[in-house]
Length: 227
Ligand code: FES
Ligand code: FES
Image (cartoon, rainbow, N blue to C red; front, side):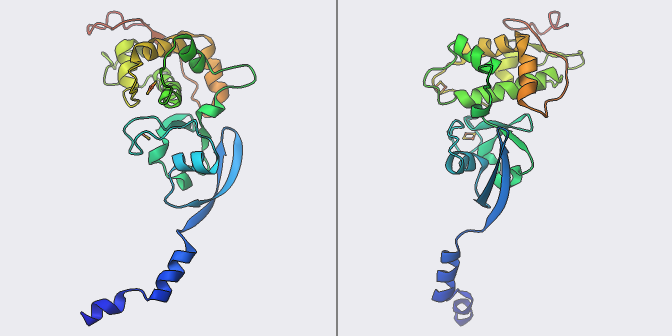
């Protein structure tokens, strides 16, 4: 008992630790093409750093546990849950949030497709949906199969409703706007401007062929899944 008491910090030691605060690291985050030097609590998520340090509140905190997709951003062109990403680990990567998608020429084609299709209600999930859709379309163009891909041996991916729903299944919408989100994503995939715009917004986007699109659900025999 006497030994246990000995290892506890003294009052002075506890006060010193509290006044020192949590350990921080000096990092520079590249967000939407701008560099931001920041002193960051080592435990801080990228989502909190974006929202609380940089006032970029487009990325939303839905669950903070990697389950809703509201916090989705693009890291080096690939979608990621920023609530599960330590901010200090994002140094050296190009981070794109919904605020960085539009440019002088207008909205990103995926943003425009969401507008045109009225693919939202309250809009809380929408920034994450849009960032996720951009990353997802890039994955499809790279030929990455999904659980809904009927024949992974085919050259290229055919995006249909099932493919989009599966590939976007990490992004939840409490308003149930999926009925318009799916056609919006397919619209963006079909748009010829999509590829150029996507590449201009993410320097790390791979040079990959377009994914073809078919409306509705593809039959399992894959007859329609040829390019
Ligand atoms: S807030 Fe990150 S997945 Fe829900
Ligand atoms: S539009 Fe309200 S949560 Fe998706």
